[in-house]
Amino acid sequence: MTTAALSMLSPAETAELLPFAPLCDAIADAARDYAAGRIHSPERQVLPLPQNGVLLSMPATAGDIGIHKLVNVCPGNGALGLPTIHGVVAAYDGATGAPLAILDGPTVTGRRTAAVSMLAVRTLARRPPQHVALFGTGKQAAYHVEALASLYPGIRVDVHGRREEACQSFCRTSGGAGIDLRPASGAVDPAVDVVITLTTSLVPVYDEAPRPDRLLVGVGAFKPEMAEFGATSIHGSDVFIDDPAGARHEAGDLILAGFDWTSGRSLADALAKAQDGTGLTDRPRLFKSVGCAAWDLAAARCALRNGSPA
Image (cartoon, rainbow, N blue to C red; front, side):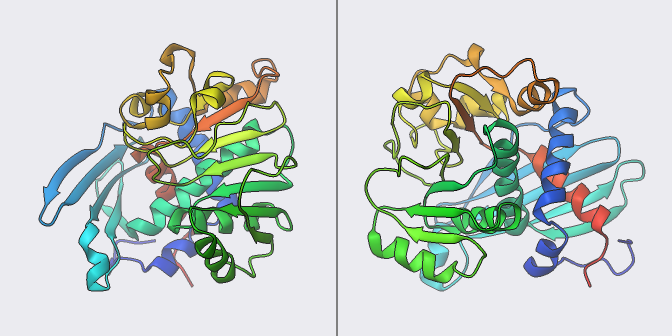
């Protein structure tokens, strides 16, 4: 990419620069950098917009680049036939401050969030997943299905939701992705080895006794009053968190369960323990994702390495 005639990339162009395998690697590098203080990522700033909307400001800097994600969330847009979320991720050269790229914000957020989950699966699951239970039928669920299809083609994915027709519709519209995608209802199939929750639920959608052979990945419950996993699942697991500092304010299921924050470990900890083979116990594992601008910086690095779209 060059600074000449710099324009915002479309969602499709942005997605083309963020394939999931290298994006997972970029996030792993960023997790180590963030833990070591080589990436600076302050808490996001939230400003009000009319009609109950908000503007979210999320900068991050490192030695090579700086990024600033600006995202507008406007709940009333659905009635206007518009997307609820608009935004951009601007990337700048670390040494000169020169602009390098302007990426589509919702696409960056969706793909890097799914990539964080996939990195957790790669790092914390006992084996590559063969059967996944996915709770949710929204945008993040679609990104996660795409990521699973890209990295684990042929696996089975059961889709759980509040309404059976929503699960069926989701499976129809997300079909053809190279995985066995099925609507599900009731309890999670005993054969499931990874559970991923992607909802805005205020009450737990999963609270089974934890199992060493089943990894739990929580992506929703991003406000203190929300909960996807219940106390039974949380307290019986070793808990890893992508951003422990942010989780104290945003990880609703952990907050409501009275989680002991001193026992939580970061994504960087998980990567280090998996690499040296000495730190991961045989206990069940739960990964909580709340997101931070460091992962947007990782996505910008990935996009810049992949160059301009065709």
